Length: 592
Image (cartoon, rainbow, N blue to C red; front, side, top):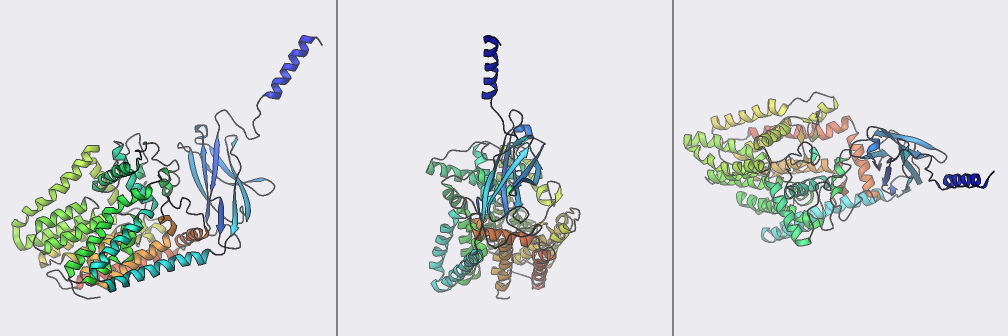
């Protein structure tokens, strides 16, 4: 062989040696799969993993991938000690991110180290490991948390009886403010803050647009007034911390499509507790003012204490972060103004409440029916007091687009019992049974609820029954019986009306029902701020909480009875007692 040929062959061999080699699973150029597992350490509360098919705590696998895998199947695999075995799979979406939850059971998981990987399109992720270890203290630590909360609640109530209203109202306000920054229902808090940020981004918070600037499920689905306050809160937060308005893209969690309740992970700034405190200030102030108003309306200090010491009030106003406290204060103030013969004030307050959350609007036709009976056409003029709130609402919608389209979308979304085209039910409603039976989405609220409400108005007019609190309770109960969503926070509306009437035992029942539902249907630690507890499944008590939620929703008939039928009996019972009352002026007696 000539020297030239030797050099050519040697060069060719050198190229082969130095050429990059892909792994056995390597695929085409641009093919990429990443995988993470959480929690990294699973503190499982039992000494044996359950069999397949049972209720378990899920290991969350987050898979991100390149656009070359869109519409292709991606498989999740686990290593059984000798080979890789298929765990499950999914179809890659256009977002490029899928979150999958696999229940830990003895088919694929074991105590000690576990390895998983994702494979698709000729690509494979790096192997990811997590470990499972037994932690038998879960039941005791979880029980201790509930026992501690119950003890604090009872102590808070008895302090109110001992201190008297003057000192207790300041104590309660301080306690609410201390709790607020470090708690929150993670999805709802993100929903509150992101809608205000969108306004500052000059993005329509009521409509993601087409093509969408953000996921449709994250649009502001309430009247617009609080969204403006949310934007104002972020401006104050920005001035205090130097935080910048995040970009439109960064505000959307990549896994929103497959894990809605983790969307809060898109934005967890270091100063989140301050921002959450700002967001909750109107809710806390409203709760405290509602207690003061109940005390004034009943002439009884105990009414205010019963309200502020109520764990449901603390949950909704100081912990959860909901709009109901603001709307409820304005509704109660409206009733008070109407009782004092101030219809202009009454209509204005009720309409402002409806501009926060719609339910106070129920009071306006009631007050008008009574006024029309007693004053004739003179009662029409005070209705003009609803115009400011109505004009503000329409103007805010108009700033961001077509106001009539926004109002139609709001009314349609709230009146039709579907979500993404499927029948949707949630909360303490007998319609959980319809959902289990796969019934079609019949809009019972529109077909039965609204006619029943009209019948209430007719009766108030014909009988000259001006007990607004009584008929407001009945109207809310009609809503509970015909609407497909009866969320726990809705009970916040009815409790002050019951306290106003002196129905303290009924108030206790209608506080206990939503509290029991929340205790069973939520992981308690989901209400802890992600700023101080980023991974809510990092310890045994939280995993036990998640197992509890799984058992609750999979109890079949027992779930329907507990979440649907028992509350329905309470609704019918209270409606009967309210309708059986005498009529005339407002009542503030001491009946049960």
